[in-house]
Length: 432
Image (cartoon, rainbow, N blue to C red; front, side, top):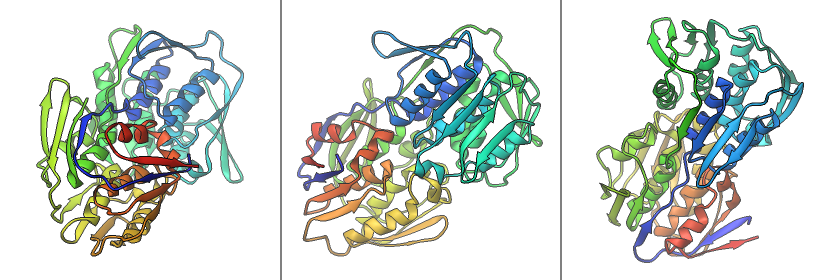
């Protein structure tokens, strides 16, 4: 597919929403397990493109991937490591950034490359942090491909990293805990690290398995390791960041949807969705998950700081485009460094609908649509999965069909998104 065309949605969306497993958790499980150097099992592994590239990378490093009945995946480390490996991270930010410290302590030379869009995203602070620990990291004339000379004795007692552009830099070193000594300190060089909620999710995940990072004035200290070193078993869970899109469908239209979400989840978007609702969206936890209900009333203008949940900005911007007044979003300084420049992308596409968007380096002000489009509208995904899925919600308010180009980009995080919408009653067609 290259585009999807959605007709105006009439009536209520109802049913069970089989959300994908969280790729964010899956990638953390994969890399943490690999850092232990022991066999590990994941039940509930994401099928997102980013995760598939990470699984492929582990296999190229020599890991055996065994699939059992159901959704159980076992990974066995190699008995003999290859002398060298060539990896490709695709478009995955976590795929690339989490892999790099893992490669630091493997006994081989690894060359790693990325897609054109991922090549544009920040990576230098992570590489600089590794070089400052004594690791050899070579870069090409255009930075990529990266060449990492791993060393089995790599186990620094101090790491300094600037995570102002991405919390994944800090998370990548948290995940290296199985190979770091107790007492190791990670110094955060930025006074304004990006998206602390995601780094905190990583820290809590590690704590659940026995590696404890504690905050002190000098940085993050590794104060505890697990008492035993047996085989690890990780359990995936439904993706709260994917749930944001269906919350958006409910906020703009009529809906009664059940999502298989855990109230005890560590995922940051849980906090966003469960806070005092700004719109007429009713949330009820049932035995089978979270029930989202809405009568599809008008959206009041709003103001939100999304520093902890920047990935929700595309959905909220679309809601704001159909609000009854001007809305303001802030805390968005990481959005220019995503799969697209999301601030520019949102301003461009919402303008096609008749909204007016003003943006700065970290804010969006959305003046809503004053007159709905009267002819079919073509919107551009900008190759960004979250932009594409957010724009689909426009079908709840548009009186005319909308076409979204580059629709296949949802493979990055939510491969069955379009087919799921169709199962819920949204009328859509694919155009090649």
